[in-house]
Length: 93
Image (cartoon, helix red, strand yellow):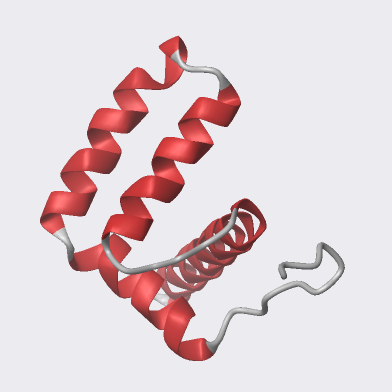
């Protein structure tokens, strides 16, 4: 039974697979772009279900909470990388 208070934690392998698929799978990226275009016409719940479905098709059995965490991690990583790039640009003569 899936108890609501027992949250399934993401493993490093699952996180790496999510990032790999999101970064390198052209078919997935195309479908994500198509879904993004539909965003204005969908309710939030519908959009999230379709988003989860796309990742499940790639073998990533995620729930909404896990997806939120993975997307937040990607966002924070991108922010850190952009900050480092800006710092390097400032250090150049």
